[in-house]
Length: 385
Image (cartoon, rainbow, N blue to C red; front, side, top):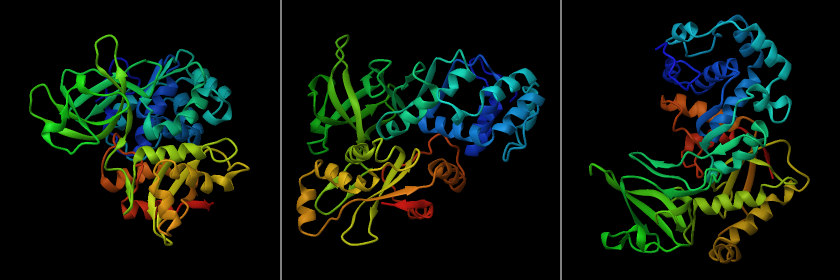
Protein backbone atom coordinates (compact mmCIF):
# COMPACT_ATOMS: atom_id res chain seq x y z
CA UNK A 1 0.00 0.00 0.00
CA UNK A 2 2.92 2.35 0.67
CA UNK A 3 4.71 1.35 -2.53
CA UNK A 4 5.67 4.01 -5.04
CA UNK A 5 4.98 2.67 -8.52
CA UNK A 6 7.70 3.72 -11.01
CA UNK A 7 6.53 6.69 -13.05
CA UNK A 8 3.89 7.80 -10.53
CA UNK A 9 4.22 10.49 -7.86
CA UNK A 10 1.52 9.28 -5.44
CA UNK A 11 1.65 6.04 -3.41
CA UNK A 12 -0.31 3.04 -4.61
CA UNK A 13 -2.76 3.48 -1.71
CA UNK A 14 -4.06 6.69 -3.29
CA UNK A 15 -6.01 4.53 -5.73
CA UNK A 16 -8.16 3.25 -2.86
CA UNK A 17 -9.59 6.71 -2.13
CA UNK A 18 -13.10 6.74 -3.58
CA UNK A 19 -14.24 10.30 -2.80
CA UNK A 20 -13.75 12.54 -5.84
CA UNK A 21 -12.31 15.61 -4.11
CA UNK A 22 -10.11 13.66 -1.68
CA UNK A 23 -8.71 11.47 -4.47
CA UNK A 24 -7.69 14.49 -6.55
CA UNK A 25 -6.37 16.50 -3.59
CA UNK A 26 -3.98 13.72 -2.53
CA UNK A 27 -2.75 13.34 -6.10
CA UNK A 28 -2.31 17.12 -6.25
CA UNK A 29 -0.41 17.13 -2.95
CA UNK A 30 2.22 14.63 -4.11
CA UNK A 31 2.39 16.21 -7.57
CA UNK A 32 3.03 19.69 -6.14
CA UNK A 33 5.73 18.31 -3.88
CA UNK A 34 7.64 16.91 -6.88
CA UNK A 35 9.30 19.66 -8.91
CA UNK A 36 10.51 17.11 -11.50
CA UNK A 37 7.07 15.95 -12.63
CA UNK A 38 7.06 15.50 -16.42
CA UNK A 39 3.51 14.42 -17.30
CA UNK A 40 -0.02 14.51 -15.91
CA UNK A 41 -2.42 11.83 -17.12
CA UNK A 42 -6.13 11.87 -16.28
CA UNK A 43 -9.06 9.93 -17.71
CA UNK A 44 -10.84 13.06 -18.95
CA UNK A 45 -9.67 16.65 -19.30
CA UNK A 46 -12.45 17.67 -16.89
CA UNK A 47 -10.66 15.79 -14.11
CA UNK A 48 -7.54 17.88 -14.70
CA UNK A 49 -9.61 21.06 -14.32
CA UNK A 50 -11.22 19.61 -11.17
CA UNK A 51 -7.75 18.94 -9.75
CA UNK A 52 -6.56 22.47 -10.52
CA UNK A 53 -9.72 23.96 -9.01
CA UNK A 54 -9.27 21.99 -5.78
CA UNK A 55 -5.64 23.16 -5.63
CA UNK A 56 -6.88 26.74 -5.95
CA UNK A 57 -9.37 26.25 -3.09
CA UNK A 58 -6.94 24.43 -0.77
CA UNK A 59 -3.70 26.17 -1.73
CA UNK A 60 -2.65 27.20 1.79
CA UNK A 61 -3.44 23.77 3.24
CA UNK A 62 -1.40 22.00 0.54
CA UNK A 63 1.58 24.29 1.00
CA UNK A 64 1.52 23.81 4.78
CA UNK A 65 1.48 20.06 4.27
CA UNK A 66 4.49 20.19 1.93
CA UNK A 67 6.35 22.49 4.30
CA UNK A 68 5.73 20.34 7.40
CA UNK A 69 5.66 16.92 5.75
CA UNK A 70 2.28 16.02 7.25
CA UNK A 71 -0.66 14.64 5.27
CA UNK A 72 -3.54 17.11 5.85
CA UNK A 73 -6.86 16.29 7.45
CA UNK A 74 -8.88 15.45 4.37
CA UNK A 75 -12.12 13.49 4.60
CA UNK A 76 -12.35 9.84 3.53
CA UNK A 77 -8.61 9.04 3.62
CA UNK A 78 -8.30 7.54 7.13
CA UNK A 79 -8.05 3.99 5.73
CA UNK A 80 -4.88 4.91 3.79
CA UNK A 81 -3.46 7.83 5.78
CA UNK A 82 -0.58 5.84 7.36
CA UNK A 83 0.59 4.61 3.96
CA UNK A 84 0.47 8.12 2.53
CA UNK A 85 2.33 9.59 5.49
CA UNK A 86 5.25 7.18 5.01
CA UNK A 87 5.91 8.87 1.66
CA UNK A 88 5.35 12.46 2.80
CA UNK A 89 8.51 14.40 3.66
CA UNK A 90 8.96 17.97 4.87
CA UNK A 91 10.25 20.31 2.15
CA UNK A 92 10.18 23.97 3.30
CA UNK A 93 12.16 25.08 0.25
CA UNK A 94 9.60 23.61 -2.18
CA UNK A 95 6.72 25.10 -0.18
CA UNK A 96 8.31 28.55 -0.37
CA UNK A 97 8.93 28.16 -4.11
CA UNK A 98 5.25 27.35 -4.63
CA UNK A 99 4.16 30.24 -2.43
CA UNK A 100 6.21 32.61 -4.59
CA UNK A 101 4.55 31.27 -7.75
CA UNK A 102 1.04 31.51 -6.32
CA UNK A 103 -2.13 29.40 -6.83
CA UNK A 104 -3.27 28.18 -10.27
CA UNK A 105 -5.53 31.02 -11.34
CA UNK A 106 -3.23 33.79 -10.12
CA UNK A 107 -1.34 33.88 -13.44
CA UNK A 108 -1.61 32.39 -16.94
CA UNK A 109 0.47 29.33 -17.92
CA UNK A 110 0.80 28.41 -14.25
CA UNK A 111 1.74 24.75 -14.65
CA UNK A 112 5.13 25.19 -16.40
CA UNK A 113 6.28 27.43 -13.55
CA UNK A 114 5.33 24.79 -10.98
CA UNK A 115 6.79 21.90 -13.01
CA UNK A 116 9.54 23.18 -15.32
CA UNK A 117 10.10 19.68 -16.79
CA UNK A 118 6.47 19.03 -17.58
CA UNK A 119 5.92 18.38 -21.27
CA UNK A 120 2.65 16.41 -21.64
CA UNK A 121 -0.98 16.48 -20.53
CA UNK A 122 -2.59 13.17 -21.47
CA UNK A 123 -6.39 13.00 -21.31
CA UNK A 124 -9.53 12.32 -23.31
CA UNK A 125 -10.39 15.71 -24.75
CA UNK A 126 -12.43 15.10 -27.91
CA UNK A 127 -16.19 15.16 -28.44
CA UNK A 128 -18.09 16.77 -25.57
CA UNK A 129 -14.82 17.17 -23.62
CA UNK A 130 -13.37 19.54 -26.23
CA UNK A 131 -15.19 22.50 -24.66
CA UNK A 132 -12.99 22.16 -21.54
CA UNK A 133 -9.71 22.11 -23.48
CA UNK A 134 -9.27 25.93 -23.71
CA UNK A 135 -9.52 26.16 -19.92
CA UNK A 136 -6.85 23.48 -19.57
CA UNK A 137 -4.66 25.25 -22.11
CA UNK A 138 -4.84 28.48 -20.11
CA UNK A 139 -3.37 26.59 -17.15
CA UNK A 140 -0.67 24.60 -18.95
CA UNK A 141 0.39 27.28 -21.43
CA UNK A 142 1.14 26.96 -25.16
CA UNK A 143 4.20 24.71 -25.02
CA UNK A 144 2.86 21.66 -23.13
CA UNK A 145 1.68 18.98 -25.56
CA UNK A 146 -1.89 17.74 -25.09
CA UNK A 147 -2.30 14.09 -26.09
CA UNK A 148 -5.49 12.10 -26.42
CA UNK A 149 -4.43 8.54 -25.45
CA UNK A 150 -6.86 6.88 -27.84
CA UNK A 151 -10.31 5.42 -28.15
CA UNK A 152 -11.31 2.42 -26.03
CA UNK A 153 -14.38 0.40 -25.13
CA UNK A 154 -14.78 -1.87 -22.11
CA UNK A 155 -12.89 -4.90 -23.43
CA UNK A 156 -10.75 -3.39 -26.18
CA UNK A 157 -8.36 -0.54 -26.87
CA UNK A 158 -9.85 0.16 -30.27
CA UNK A 159 -7.81 3.00 -31.75
CA UNK A 160 -4.90 5.31 -31.16
CA UNK A 161 -4.26 8.90 -32.26
CA UNK A 162 -3.60 9.19 -35.99
CA UNK A 163 -1.30 12.14 -35.30
CA UNK A 164 0.03 12.62 -31.74
CA UNK A 165 -0.79 16.34 -31.86
CA UNK A 166 -4.33 15.82 -33.22
CA UNK A 167 -6.72 15.14 -30.34
CA UNK A 168 -9.77 14.44 -32.55
CA UNK A 169 -8.61 11.94 -35.19
CA UNK A 170 -8.04 8.22 -34.52
CA UNK A 171 -6.82 5.20 -36.47
CA UNK A 172 -7.92 1.65 -35.73
CA UNK A 173 -5.00 -0.15 -34.08
CA UNK A 174 -6.03 -3.30 -32.24
CA UNK A 175 -5.52 -7.05 -32.43
CA UNK A 176 -9.22 -7.50 -31.77
CA UNK A 177 -11.59 -7.95 -34.69
CA UNK A 178 -13.43 -4.72 -35.58
CA UNK A 179 -16.32 -4.71 -38.05
CA UNK A 180 -18.76 -1.94 -38.83
CA UNK A 181 -22.49 -1.32 -39.17
CA UNK A 182 -23.50 1.35 -41.68
CA UNK A 183 -25.71 3.76 -39.74
CA UNK A 184 -28.00 4.12 -42.75
CA UNK A 185 -28.72 0.36 -42.91
CA UNK A 186 -30.84 -1.88 -40.75
CA UNK A 187 -28.91 -3.46 -37.88
CA UNK A 188 -28.80 -7.00 -39.22
CA UNK A 189 -25.87 -9.37 -39.64
CA UNK A 190 -25.90 -9.11 -43.42
CA UNK A 191 -25.18 -5.38 -43.28
CA UNK A 192 -21.93 -5.68 -41.32
CA UNK A 193 -19.04 -4.15 -43.27
CA UNK A 194 -15.37 -5.00 -43.16
CA UNK A 195 -12.74 -2.28 -42.88
CA UNK A 196 -12.01 -2.33 -46.61
CA UNK A 197 -15.71 -1.79 -47.42
CA UNK A 198 -16.01 1.52 -45.57
CA UNK A 199 -16.73 4.76 -47.43
CA UNK A 200 -15.16 8.02 -46.27
CA UNK A 201 -17.78 10.55 -45.17
CA UNK A 202 -20.23 7.95 -43.84
CA UNK A 203 -21.19 7.10 -40.27
CA UNK A 204 -20.68 3.65 -38.75
CA UNK A 205 -21.03 1.80 -35.48
CA UNK A 206 -18.25 -0.56 -34.47
CA UNK A 207 -18.76 -4.27 -33.86
CA UNK A 208 -15.93 -5.54 -31.67
CA UNK A 209 -14.90 -9.16 -31.15
CA UNK A 210 -12.10 -9.72 -28.65
CA UNK A 211 -9.16 -11.91 -29.66
CA UNK A 212 -10.28 -14.81 -27.45
CA UNK A 213 -13.79 -14.58 -28.89
CA UNK A 214 -15.49 -14.29 -25.52
CA UNK A 215 -17.08 -10.89 -26.22
CA UNK A 216 -18.72 -9.65 -29.41
CA UNK A 217 -21.02 -6.67 -29.35
CA UNK A 218 -22.09 -3.51 -31.17
CA UNK A 219 -20.73 -0.29 -29.71
CA UNK A 220 -23.19 2.50 -28.95
CA UNK A 221 -20.67 5.00 -30.32
CA UNK A 222 -20.82 6.30 -33.88
CA UNK A 223 -17.68 6.95 -35.95
CA UNK A 224 -17.31 9.38 -38.85
CA UNK A 225 -14.88 7.67 -41.21
CA UNK A 226 -12.69 10.22 -42.99
CA UNK A 227 -10.20 7.97 -44.81
CA UNK A 228 -7.58 5.27 -44.45
CA UNK A 229 -4.09 5.16 -43.00
CA UNK A 230 -1.63 5.20 -45.94
CA UNK A 231 0.75 3.04 -43.91
CA UNK A 232 -1.51 -0.02 -43.54
CA UNK A 233 -5.00 0.81 -44.80
CA UNK A 234 -6.63 0.96 -41.35
CA UNK A 235 -9.75 3.17 -41.08
CA UNK A 236 -9.20 6.72 -39.84
CA UNK A 237 -12.15 8.27 -38.05
CA UNK A 238 -13.43 11.02 -35.78
CA UNK A 239 -15.75 10.34 -32.86
CA UNK A 240 -19.28 11.45 -33.80
CA UNK A 241 -21.36 10.66 -30.73
CA UNK A 242 -23.37 8.01 -28.91
CA UNK A 243 -26.64 6.75 -30.37
CA UNK A 244 -28.29 6.48 -26.95
CA UNK A 245 -27.36 10.04 -25.93
CA UNK A 246 -29.96 11.89 -27.95
CA UNK A 247 -33.07 14.00 -27.45
CA UNK A 248 -36.01 12.44 -29.24
CA UNK A 249 -38.94 14.45 -30.51
CA UNK A 250 -41.81 12.92 -32.47
CA UNK A 251 -40.56 14.55 -35.65
CA UNK A 252 -36.76 14.26 -35.26
CA UNK A 253 -33.86 12.98 -33.17
CA UNK A 254 -31.25 15.47 -31.96
CA UNK A 255 -27.97 13.57 -31.72
CA UNK A 256 -24.96 14.15 -29.50
CA UNK A 257 -23.09 15.55 -32.50
CA UNK A 258 -25.93 18.02 -33.13
CA UNK A 259 -25.88 19.18 -29.51
CA UNK A 260 -22.10 19.66 -29.55
CA UNK A 261 -22.45 21.66 -32.78
CA UNK A 262 -25.07 23.95 -31.25
CA UNK A 263 -22.95 24.49 -28.13
CA UNK A 264 -19.91 25.36 -30.24
CA UNK A 265 -22.01 27.96 -32.08
CA UNK A 266 -22.59 29.98 -28.90
CA UNK A 267 -19.11 29.41 -27.45
CA UNK A 268 -17.69 32.80 -28.37
CA UNK A 269 -15.64 35.44 -26.57
CA UNK A 270 -18.37 38.09 -26.70
CA UNK A 271 -21.16 35.65 -25.86
CA UNK A 272 -20.47 32.67 -23.57
CA UNK A 273 -17.18 30.87 -22.97
CA UNK A 274 -18.52 27.37 -22.36
CA UNK A 275 -16.45 25.24 -20.01
CA UNK A 276 -18.84 22.28 -19.62
CA UNK A 277 -22.42 21.60 -20.58
CA UNK A 278 -25.28 19.15 -20.59
CA UNK A 279 -28.74 19.22 -22.13
CA UNK A 280 -32.24 18.23 -21.05
CA UNK A 281 -35.64 17.90 -22.66
CA UNK A 282 -37.13 21.16 -21.39
CA UNK A 283 -40.87 20.77 -20.76
CA UNK A 284 -41.24 23.62 -18.27
CA UNK A 285 -43.32 25.35 -20.95
CA UNK A 286 -45.00 24.07 -24.08
CA UNK A 287 -44.04 23.40 -26.76
CA UNK A 288 -41.07 21.41 -25.50
CA UNK A 289 -37.54 22.23 -26.57
CA UNK A 290 -33.87 21.52 -25.97
CA UNK A 291 -32.56 22.97 -22.71
CA UNK A 292 -28.84 23.78 -22.48
CA UNK A 293 -27.32 23.93 -18.99
CA UNK A 294 -23.89 25.56 -19.12
CA UNK A 295 -20.98 26.26 -16.83
CA UNK A 296 -19.02 29.16 -18.30
CA UNK A 297 -15.62 30.71 -17.80
CA UNK A 298 -15.81 34.28 -16.54
CA UNK A 299 -18.86 36.46 -17.01
CA UNK A 300 -21.35 36.39 -19.91
CA UNK A 301 -20.20 38.54 -22.85
CA UNK A 302 -21.87 41.65 -24.23
CA UNK A 303 -23.84 39.57 -26.73
CA UNK A 304 -24.93 36.87 -24.29
CA UNK A 305 -28.59 37.67 -24.95
CA UNK A 306 -28.05 36.52 -28.53
CA UNK A 307 -27.18 33.00 -27.36
CA UNK A 308 -30.72 31.62 -27.65
CA UNK A 309 -31.43 32.80 -31.22
CA UNK A 310 -27.95 31.75 -32.32
CA UNK A 311 -28.40 28.32 -30.73
CA UNK A 312 -31.74 28.03 -32.52
CA UNK A 313 -30.15 28.92 -35.85
CA UNK A 314 -27.47 26.28 -35.29
CA UNK A 315 -30.12 23.73 -34.34
CA UNK A 316 -32.12 24.44 -37.51
CA UNK A 317 -29.00 23.77 -39.59
CA UNK A 318 -28.80 20.18 -38.28
CA UNK A 319 -32.22 19.07 -39.53
CA UNK A 320 -34.85 20.68 -41.78
CA UNK A 321 -37.63 19.15 -39.66
CA UNK A 322 -36.88 21.59 -36.83
CA UNK A 323 -38.00 24.59 -38.90
CA UNK A 324 -41.25 22.86 -39.87
CA UNK A 325 -41.88 21.94 -36.22
CA UNK A 326 -41.27 25.53 -35.16
CA UNK A 327 -43.61 26.88 -37.85
CA UNK A 328 -46.39 24.53 -36.72
CA UNK A 329 -46.00 25.30 -33.00
CA UNK A 330 -44.31 22.04 -31.97
CA UNK A 331 -40.96 23.57 -31.04
CA UNK A 332 -39.74 26.79 -29.43
CA UNK A 333 -36.30 28.33 -29.19
CA UNK A 334 -33.79 26.37 -27.07
CA UNK A 335 -33.41 27.55 -23.49
CA UNK A 336 -30.01 28.46 -22.06
CA UNK A 337 -29.34 28.35 -18.32
CA UNK A 338 -26.03 29.06 -16.57
CA UNK A 339 -25.00 27.34 -13.34
CA UNK A 340 -22.58 28.72 -10.76
CA UNK A 341 -18.83 28.04 -11.17
CA UNK A 342 -17.70 24.62 -9.98
CA UNK A 343 -21.14 23.03 -10.41
CA UNK A 344 -20.11 20.21 -12.70
CA UNK A 345 -17.09 19.34 -10.57
CA UNK A 346 -19.40 19.24 -7.57
CA UNK A 347 -21.81 17.09 -9.57
CA UNK A 348 -19.10 14.48 -10.12
CA UNK A 349 -18.47 14.39 -6.37
CA UNK A 350 -22.20 14.20 -5.58
CA UNK A 351 -22.84 11.53 -8.19
CA UNK A 352 -19.95 9.39 -6.95
CA UNK A 353 -21.16 9.55 -3.37
CA UNK A 354 -24.74 8.83 -4.42
CA UNK A 355 -23.71 5.74 -6.40
CA UNK A 356 -20.95 4.78 -3.94
CA UNK A 357 -18.47 4.43 -6.77
CA UNK A 358 -15.04 5.71 -7.71
CA UNK A 359 -14.44 8.70 -9.95
CA UNK A 360 -12.97 6.97 -13.00
CA UNK A 361 -16.12 6.80 -15.10
CA UNK A 362 -18.19 9.66 -13.67
CA UNK A 363 -18.73 12.16 -16.44
CA UNK A 364 -21.32 14.71 -17.46
CA UNK A 365 -23.67 13.14 -20.04
CA UNK A 366 -24.43 15.24 -23.09
CA UNK A 367 -28.12 14.48 -22.42
CA UNK A 368 -29.23 14.36 -18.80
CA UNK A 369 -32.22 12.08 -18.17
CA UNK A 370 -31.94 11.15 -14.48
CA UNK A 371 -34.64 13.22 -12.68
CA UNK A 372 -32.60 13.55 -9.46
CA UNK A 373 -29.55 14.79 -11.38
CA UNK A 374 -31.63 17.30 -13.35
CA UNK A 375 -33.21 18.63 -10.16
CA UNK A 376 -29.75 18.88 -8.54
CA UNK A 377 -28.43 20.93 -11.47
CA UNK A 378 -31.49 23.17 -11.73
CA UNK A 379 -31.07 24.17 -8.08
CA UNK A 380 -27.68 25.63 -9.02
CA UNK A 381 -28.83 27.76 -11.95
CA UNK A 382 -27.84 31.40 -11.41
CA UNK A 383 -28.97 32.92 -14.71
CA UNK A 384 -31.35 32.13 -17.55
CA UNK A 385 -30.95 33.93 -20.86
